[in-house]
Length: 291
Image 1 (spheres, rainbow, N blue to C red):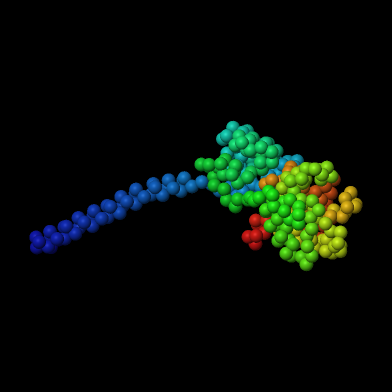
Image 2: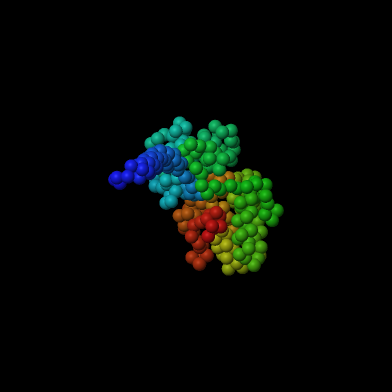
């Protein structure tokens, strides 16, 4: 320490200030750290609605309780929220979106005042967001849009219309519907057209190759699509289901299950007869658009 008292005084003052500043920084960090920890701890989990909808279609018809790859962790969060609401047994919260989870989610929808197709056990964006309040955030939401749109004069929802337009744009001929969605008046459809996302397409003016190319275009944008033939018990046409449509009937969703596992979507559940060059990897509209 310098001998000069004035210099000592100045240096002592500077030293004291440095100590106070150092203390202030340390104290500030100590106060900020718990706040950061609280913010991190308070962050909500994320539920990918696209993955949950895939599981809603793929899981229920399974004989076992195995889960859909990529979806299980998101389904589990939904199931845990249903358990917390007293709508699902905790022993059934396993990441498998089976019939018990469908029933529990339908009960949740009814508790919110939904009826009919809006209480089908398949999450819509609003009901899923409300279920997740304080528990999880909903990412990649899926919406059908208007249910009163049309394509070529047949009723479809807005999401289905957009998908058909995208498939149409891949072809040099037009996609012509013979039956749209939300139609429960045709007993030959076995309930598949009762909800949204399901259409039948005319192929009477197309060659065999053009028919298969239409199937491929539909599959590419996210439809489960099959060419129906007289050997299947139908006049020639294409039957197409929009994968992950929240409005789809149970019968339509069961056909998605078949498609996922390479089957024909008919009561016999035979192997899909689509030639390999017209098949594509399983996808849905939102995933196709991202790609």
